Image 1 (cartoon, rainbow, N blue to C red):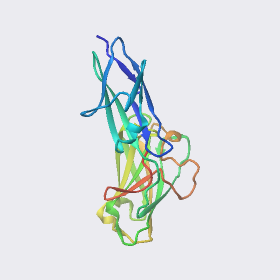
Image 2 (spheres, one colour; image 1 turned 30 degrees about the horizontal axis):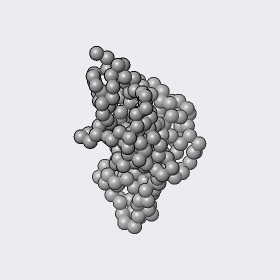
Image 3 (cartoon, rainbow, N blue to C red; image 1 turned 120 degrees about the vertical axis):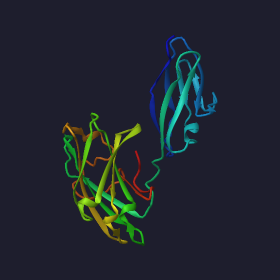
Image 4 (spheres, rainbow, N blue to C red; image 1 turned 135 degrees about the vertical axis):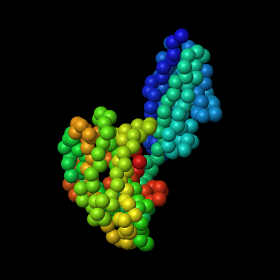
Length: 248
């Protein structure tokens, strides 16, 4: 028995008006037939949610736009053999949120490749009340270019380098320009940021074996900036709520 195969196995859909497009999926049936497409317990409706012509399924943009932001998995079931899964990332790049923080950024090293990534951040409290820095998280999205353990360095910070934290996570599904994310946070000892005030964080990451990253394919990389500039390709959160930037 030969399993059927779908291409691609990952895809992204942008819910922003004007960016919505159907997603084609090619089937290599290997003698089988497509029985159904499921999203969890729900079965997609042929002719409405998708069309099947020959060996190609086209997922309707209207159906995809009805899905919530985040990850979704569509299971293709065939008459024989194993199922196949299309991992979707649903996002909406309509606009960056209007929150109570602003993040400016530039990369101190703008080389196409290098053994470290060195983003510098300027966080401003644009609200009307003091902000506990321990409630704030900043995320920088990039490609690791070879899986290795990584190290985080807070080279300098207004609040004190020892009060800055860094955590690495792999993204699943991967995004365009990002398979990993660096999340920068603050300890309780970092204190508060008063309304209208700013704080700076100079960071650096590297792999244990010091092999190169390729920065030019990184979502958050700002290759043309040499000083602090508003940058929506890094995101900022307060108590888990997105307050700045557009996630990839």
